Amino acid sequence: MSQEAAANYYSKDFEWNHLRLEIETNPSFLYHLLPFIDDTNASTSASTADANSDSEAWNKFHTRHSTGKFFKERRYLLKEFPELASCRDYAKVLEVGCGNGSTALPILRAKENIVVYACDCSNEALDRAKENIAAANLISAEHRYHPFLCDISTSGFPEWLACSSCQERFCKSNCNRVDFCEVSCSEESSCCIGGVDLVTLIFTLSALPLRMMPTAIQECFSVLKPGGMLLFRDYGLYDMTMLRFDPKQRVGYREYRRSDGTRSYFFSLESTRDLFSSAGFTELELEYCCVKSTNRRNGKLMRRVWVHGKFQRPKGS
Ligand SMILES: C[S@@+](CC[C@H](N)C(=O)[O-])C[C@H]1O[C@@H](n2cnc3c(N)ncnc32)[C@H](O)[C@@H]1O
Image (cartoon, rainbow, N blue to C red; front, side, top):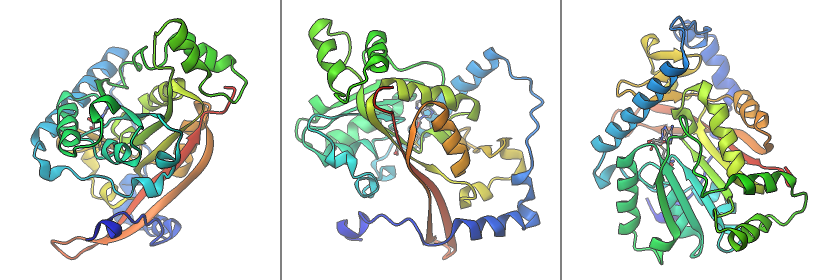
Protein backbone atom coordinates (compact mmCIF):
# COMPACT_ATOMS: atom_id res chain seq x y z
CA MET A 1 0.00 0.00 0.00
CA SER A 2 1.40 3.40 -0.87
CA GLN A 3 2.01 6.02 1.84
CA GLU A 4 -0.75 8.12 0.25
CA ALA A 5 -3.32 5.29 0.35
CA ALA A 6 -2.33 4.35 3.89
CA ALA A 7 -3.00 7.89 5.03
CA ASN A 8 -6.63 7.92 3.87
CA TYR A 9 -9.31 8.15 6.50
CA TYR A 10 -12.54 6.27 5.83
CA SER A 11 -15.50 6.50 8.12
CA LYS A 12 -18.71 5.40 6.38
CA ASP A 13 -18.73 2.00 4.68
CA PHE A 14 -22.08 1.06 6.25
CA GLU A 15 -24.83 2.49 8.42
CA TRP A 16 -24.37 1.83 12.14
CA ASN A 17 -28.17 1.62 12.61
CA HIS A 18 -28.40 -1.27 10.13
CA LEU A 19 -25.74 -3.14 12.07
CA ARG A 20 -27.50 -2.35 15.37
CA LEU A 21 -30.82 -3.79 14.08
CA GLU A 22 -29.09 -6.91 12.86
CA ILE A 23 -27.32 -7.50 16.19
CA GLU A 24 -30.26 -6.66 18.43
CA THR A 25 -32.59 -9.07 16.62
CA ASN A 26 -30.12 -11.96 16.52
CA PRO A 27 -30.72 -14.29 19.52
CA SER A 28 -27.13 -15.51 19.49
CA PHE A 29 -25.98 -12.01 20.50
CA LEU A 30 -28.60 -11.58 23.23
CA TYR A 31 -26.11 -11.96 26.11
CA HIS A 32 -24.31 -8.80 24.99
CA LEU A 33 -27.49 -6.78 25.52
CA LEU A 34 -28.52 -8.03 28.95
CA PRO A 35 -27.96 -5.92 32.05
CA PHE A 36 -24.89 -7.01 33.99
CA ILE A 37 -25.40 -8.10 37.56
CA ASP A 38 -22.26 -7.59 39.61
CA ASP A 39 -22.28 -9.72 42.74
CA THR A 40 -18.68 -8.98 43.78
CA ASN A 41 -19.49 -6.04 46.12
CA ALA A 42 -16.51 -3.91 44.96
CA SER A 43 -14.83 -1.94 47.76
CA THR A 44 -12.27 0.86 47.31
CA SER A 45 -9.37 -1.46 48.08
CA ALA A 46 -10.72 -3.98 45.58
CA SER A 47 -10.79 -1.18 42.97
CA THR A 48 -7.13 -0.33 43.60
CA ALA A 49 -6.19 -4.01 43.40
CA ASP A 50 -8.14 -4.26 40.10
CA ALA A 51 -6.31 -1.23 38.71
CA ASN A 52 -2.93 -2.73 39.66
CA SER A 53 -3.76 -6.00 37.94
CA ASP A 54 -5.03 -4.07 34.88
CA SER A 55 -1.72 -2.21 34.53
CA GLU A 56 0.20 -5.45 35.16
CA ALA A 57 -1.79 -7.06 32.31
CA TRP A 58 -0.82 -4.18 30.02
CA ASN A 59 2.82 -4.44 31.06
CA LYS A 60 2.81 -8.14 30.14
CA PHE A 61 1.06 -7.30 26.87
CA HIS A 62 3.81 -4.84 25.92
CA THR A 63 6.53 -7.32 26.97
CA ARG A 64 5.00 -9.98 24.72
CA HIS A 65 4.72 -7.57 21.81
CA SER A 66 8.17 -6.09 22.13
CA THR A 67 9.29 -6.59 18.53
CA GLY A 68 9.16 -3.75 16.03
CA LYS A 69 6.77 -5.85 13.92
CA PHE A 70 3.85 -5.12 16.20
CA PHE A 71 4.37 -1.37 15.90
CA LYS A 72 2.05 0.39 13.46
CA GLU A 73 2.04 4.14 13.08
CA ARG A 74 -1.48 5.61 12.89
CA ARG A 75 -1.05 7.33 9.55
CA TYR A 76 -4.73 8.31 9.31
CA LEU A 77 -4.47 10.32 12.54
CA LEU A 78 -3.76 13.71 10.93
CA LYS A 79 -6.62 13.25 8.47
CA GLU A 80 -8.96 12.45 11.32
CA PHE A 81 -7.64 15.23 13.56
CA PRO A 82 -6.16 17.97 11.34
CA GLU A 83 -5.76 20.24 14.40
CA LEU A 84 -2.68 18.19 15.28
CA ALA A 85 -0.98 19.84 12.31
CA SER A 86 -2.79 23.19 12.23
CA CYS A 87 -2.28 24.03 15.93
CA ARG A 88 -0.12 26.97 17.04
CA ASP A 89 3.69 26.72 16.98
CA TYR A 90 5.15 24.97 20.03
CA ALA A 91 1.73 23.57 20.94
CA LYS A 92 1.77 21.01 23.74
CA VAL A 93 -0.01 17.70 23.32
CA LEU A 94 -0.67 15.13 26.02
CA GLU A 95 -1.02 11.58 24.63
CA VAL A 96 -2.70 9.48 27.34
CA GLY A 97 -1.88 5.75 27.23
CA CYS A 98 0.79 6.11 24.56
CA GLY A 99 1.51 2.37 24.13
CA ASN A 100 4.39 1.82 21.73
CA GLY A 101 4.10 5.30 20.21
CA SER A 102 1.64 4.65 17.34
CA THR A 103 -0.09 7.96 17.99
CA ALA A 104 2.82 9.98 19.43
CA LEU A 105 5.00 9.42 16.36
CA PRO A 106 2.66 10.86 13.69
CA ILE A 107 2.02 13.84 15.98
CA LEU A 108 5.75 14.52 16.31
CA ARG A 109 6.05 14.24 12.53
CA ALA A 110 3.11 16.62 11.98
CA LYS A 111 5.01 19.75 13.03
CA GLU A 112 8.69 20.32 13.67
CA ASN A 113 8.08 22.25 16.86
CA ILE A 114 5.13 20.44 18.41
CA VAL A 115 5.85 19.06 21.91
CA VAL A 116 4.41 15.71 23.02
CA TYR A 117 4.01 14.61 26.64
CA ALA A 118 3.15 10.91 26.63
CA CYS A 119 2.13 8.77 29.57
CA ASP A 120 1.33 5.13 30.07
CA CYS A 121 0.73 2.86 33.06
CA SER A 122 3.31 0.42 31.66
CA ASN A 123 7.07 0.96 31.81
CA GLU A 124 7.45 -1.57 29.00
CA ALA A 125 5.18 0.54 26.77
CA LEU A 126 7.22 3.66 27.53
CA ASP A 127 10.44 1.83 26.58
CA ARG A 128 8.94 0.57 23.30
CA ALA A 129 7.65 4.04 22.42
CA LYS A 130 11.05 5.59 23.14
CA GLU A 131 12.75 3.05 20.86
CA ASN A 132 10.24 3.57 18.03
CA ILE A 133 10.53 7.34 18.24
CA ALA A 134 14.34 7.21 18.37
CA ALA A 135 14.34 4.94 15.29
CA ALA A 136 12.31 7.52 13.34
CA ASN A 137 15.18 10.06 13.46
CA LEU A 138 12.96 13.08 13.94
CA ILE A 139 14.32 16.60 14.29
CA SER A 140 15.00 17.42 18.00
CA ALA A 141 12.87 14.51 19.22
CA GLU A 142 14.79 14.49 22.49
CA HIS A 143 13.49 18.01 23.27
CA ARG A 144 9.99 17.44 21.93
CA TYR A 145 9.07 14.05 23.38
CA HIS A 146 8.56 13.69 27.14
CA PRO A 147 7.38 10.26 28.32
CA PHE A 148 6.29 9.59 31.91
CA LEU A 149 4.74 6.78 33.91
CA CYS A 150 1.17 7.44 35.06
CA ASP A 151 -1.81 5.21 35.76
CA ILE A 152 -4.80 7.46 35.19
CA SER A 153 -7.16 5.12 36.98
CA THR A 154 -5.25 5.30 40.27
CA SER A 155 -3.57 8.72 40.25
CA GLY A 156 -4.04 12.13 38.76
CA PHE A 157 -1.61 13.72 36.32
CA PRO A 158 1.58 15.11 37.89
CA GLU A 159 1.55 18.72 39.13
CA TRP A 160 4.25 19.70 36.64
CA LEU A 161 1.67 19.44 33.83
CA ALA A 162 -0.65 22.00 35.41
CA CYS A 163 -0.16 22.92 39.06
CA SER A 164 -3.09 23.66 41.35
CA SER A 165 -2.68 27.44 41.11
CA CYS A 166 -2.58 27.22 37.31
CA GLN A 167 -5.73 25.11 37.33
CA GLU A 168 -7.42 27.68 39.54
CA ARG A 169 -6.36 30.43 37.18
CA PHE A 170 -7.76 28.44 34.23
CA CYS A 171 -11.12 28.47 35.98
CA LYS A 172 -11.03 32.19 36.73
CA SER A 173 -9.69 33.29 33.36
CA ASN A 174 -12.52 34.55 31.21
CA CYS A 175 -10.36 35.81 28.40
CA ASN A 176 -9.45 34.07 25.17
CA ARG A 177 -5.71 34.15 25.85
CA VAL A 178 -5.12 30.48 26.47
CA ASP A 179 -1.39 31.18 26.84
CA PHE A 180 -2.03 33.40 29.89
CA CYS A 181 -1.34 30.78 32.50
CA GLU A 182 1.78 29.44 30.83
CA VAL A 183 3.33 32.90 30.80
CA SER A 184 2.48 33.74 34.41
CA CYS A 185 3.47 30.32 35.70
CA SER A 186 6.83 30.14 34.07
CA GLU A 187 7.65 33.75 34.93
CA GLU A 188 6.50 33.69 38.52
CA SER A 189 7.25 30.24 39.83
CA SER A 190 8.41 27.85 37.07
CA CYS A 191 6.18 25.33 38.79
CA CYS A 192 4.65 23.63 35.77
CA ILE A 193 4.32 23.72 31.99
CA GLY A 194 1.01 25.58 32.27
CA GLY A 195 -1.28 22.86 30.89
CA VAL A 196 -1.62 21.48 27.38
CA ASP A 197 -3.33 22.63 24.18
CA LEU A 198 -4.49 19.18 23.09
CA VAL A 199 -5.12 15.82 24.73
CA THR A 200 -5.27 12.63 22.69
CA LEU A 201 -7.18 9.62 24.04
CA ILE A 202 -6.77 7.03 21.32
CA PHE A 203 -7.92 3.51 22.25
CA THR A 204 -6.99 4.14 25.89
CA LEU A 205 -10.25 5.00 27.67
CA SER A 206 -11.73 1.61 26.71
CA ALA A 207 -8.92 -0.07 28.67
CA LEU A 208 -10.20 1.42 31.94
CA PRO A 209 -13.06 0.08 34.04
CA LEU A 210 -16.19 2.08 33.21
CA ARG A 211 -16.51 3.29 36.82
CA MET A 212 -13.07 4.92 36.63
CA MET A 213 -13.66 6.76 33.37
CA PRO A 214 -15.34 9.89 34.84
CA THR A 215 -12.29 10.63 37.05
CA ALA A 216 -9.87 10.00 34.19
CA ILE A 217 -11.80 12.38 31.89
CA GLN A 218 -11.99 14.98 34.63
CA GLU A 219 -8.19 14.76 34.95
CA CYS A 220 -7.79 15.38 31.21
CA PHE A 221 -10.11 18.38 31.49
CA SER A 222 -8.10 19.83 34.38
CA VAL A 223 -4.76 19.83 32.52
CA LEU A 224 -6.20 21.27 29.29
CA LYS A 225 -5.95 25.00 28.78
CA PRO A 226 -9.35 26.67 28.37
CA GLY A 227 -10.23 26.44 24.67
CA GLY A 228 -8.04 23.34 24.33
CA MET A 229 -9.35 20.19 22.70
CA LEU A 230 -9.51 16.50 23.54
CA LEU A 231 -9.30 14.19 20.52
CA PHE A 232 -10.97 10.82 21.04
CA ARG A 233 -11.04 7.56 19.11
CA ASP A 234 -12.01 4.21 20.59
CA TYR A 235 -13.99 1.00 20.16
CA GLY A 236 -17.64 1.48 19.17
CA LEU A 237 -20.70 -0.50 20.18
CA TYR A 238 -21.15 -3.70 18.11
CA ASP A 239 -17.64 -3.63 16.71
CA MET A 240 -16.85 -7.17 15.56
CA THR A 241 -14.29 -7.58 18.37
CA MET A 242 -17.11 -7.06 20.90
CA LEU A 243 -19.30 -9.69 19.29
CA ARG A 244 -16.47 -12.23 19.53
CA PHE A 245 -16.32 -12.12 23.34
CA ASP A 246 -18.06 -15.05 24.97
CA PRO A 247 -20.43 -14.65 27.93
CA LYS A 248 -17.74 -15.59 30.48
CA GLN A 249 -15.59 -12.65 29.35
CA ARG A 250 -18.24 -10.10 30.27
CA VAL A 251 -17.14 -8.08 33.31
CA GLY A 252 -19.77 -5.34 33.09
CA TYR A 253 -22.36 -3.84 30.75
CA ARG A 254 -20.49 -3.51 27.43
CA GLU A 255 -17.26 -4.30 29.35
CA TYR A 256 -15.15 -7.40 28.65
CA ARG A 257 -11.87 -8.91 29.75
CA ARG A 258 -9.58 -10.45 27.12
CA SER A 259 -7.82 -13.75 27.84
CA ASP A 260 -4.56 -11.82 28.48
CA GLY A 261 -6.21 -9.86 31.31
CA THR A 262 -6.60 -6.51 29.49
CA ARG A 263 -10.04 -4.93 29.38
CA SER A 264 -12.18 -3.40 26.69
CA TYR A 265 -15.30 -1.26 26.85
CA PHE A 266 -17.40 -0.51 23.76
CA PHE A 267 -18.76 3.03 23.51
CA SER A 268 -22.11 4.15 22.15
CA LEU A 269 -22.45 7.79 21.10
CA GLU A 270 -24.74 8.31 24.09
CA SER A 271 -22.35 6.87 26.69
CA THR A 272 -19.47 8.88 25.19
CA ARG A 273 -21.52 12.08 25.21
CA ASP A 274 -22.57 11.55 28.84
CA LEU A 275 -19.01 10.91 30.01
CA PHE A 276 -17.51 13.99 28.36
CA SER A 277 -20.34 16.42 29.01
CA SER A 278 -20.42 15.45 32.71
CA ALA A 279 -16.77 16.52 32.94
CA GLY A 280 -17.61 19.96 31.47
CA PHE A 281 -16.55 19.40 27.85
CA THR A 282 -18.38 20.87 24.87
CA GLU A 283 -18.99 18.38 22.09
CA LEU A 284 -17.62 19.51 18.70
CA GLU A 285 -17.81 16.23 16.77
CA LEU A 286 -19.12 12.79 17.66
CA GLU A 287 -19.87 9.96 15.25
CA TYR A 288 -19.47 6.28 14.54
CA CYS A 289 -16.81 5.31 12.00
CA CYS A 290 -18.06 2.17 10.28
CA VAL A 291 -15.45 0.46 8.13
CA LYS A 292 -15.59 -2.84 6.23
CA SER A 293 -12.42 -4.79 5.73
CA THR A 294 -11.49 -8.32 4.75
CA ASN A 295 -9.46 -10.67 6.90
CA ARG A 296 -6.39 -11.49 4.80
CA ARG A 297 -6.04 -15.00 6.24
CA ASN A 298 -9.61 -16.33 5.94
CA GLY A 299 -11.22 -13.86 3.51
CA LYS A 300 -14.00 -13.07 6.01
CA LEU A 301 -15.68 -9.68 5.98
CA MET A 302 -15.10 -7.66 9.15
CA ARG A 303 -17.32 -4.79 10.19
CA ARG A 304 -15.34 -2.47 12.41
CA VAL A 305 -16.98 0.23 14.49
CA TRP A 306 -15.08 3.02 16.19
CA VAL A 307 -16.22 6.19 17.88
CA HIS A 308 -14.66 9.45 16.77
CA GLY A 309 -15.02 12.52 18.96
CA LYS A 310 -13.66 16.03 19.47
CA PHE A 311 -14.42 17.79 22.74
CA GLN A 312 -13.43 21.27 23.85
CA ARG A 313 -12.73 22.71 27.27
CA PRO A 314 -14.83 25.88 27.07
CA LYS A 315 -12.95 29.17 27.15
CA GLY A 316 -13.42 30.71 30.57
CA SER A 317 -14.00 27.37 32.30
C1 LIG B 1 -4.68 0.02 22.94
S1 LIG B 1 -3.31 0.86 23.61
C2 LIG B 1 -3.36 2.40 22.74
C3 LIG B 1 -2.01 3.03 22.60
C4 LIG B 1 -1.92 4.33 21.83
N1 LIG B 1 -2.75 5.37 22.39
C5 LIG B 1 -2.20 4.13 20.37
O1 LIG B 1 -2.82 4.99 19.76
O2 LIG B 1 -1.79 3.13 19.82
C6 LIG B 1 -3.87 1.32 25.22
C7 LIG B 1 -2.73 1.82 26.07
O3 LIG B 1 -3.26 2.37 27.28
C8 LIG B 1 -2.41 2.00 28.34
N2 LIG B 1 -3.23 2.04 29.55
C9 LIG B 1 -4.18 1.16 29.95
N3 LIG B 1 -4.71 1.53 31.12
C10 LIG B 1 -4.07 2.69 31.48
C11 LIG B 1 -4.16 3.54 32.60
N4 LIG B 1 -5.01 3.29 33.60
N5 LIG B 1 -3.35 4.63 32.66
C12 LIG B 1 -2.46 4.89 31.66
N6 LIG B 1 -2.33 4.10 30.59
C13 LIG B 1 -3.13 3.02 30.48
C14 LIG B 1 -1.91 0.61 27.98
O4 LIG B 1 -0.69 0.26 28.60
C15 LIG B 1 -1.76 0.72 26.48
O5 LIG B 1 -0.46 1.11 26.13
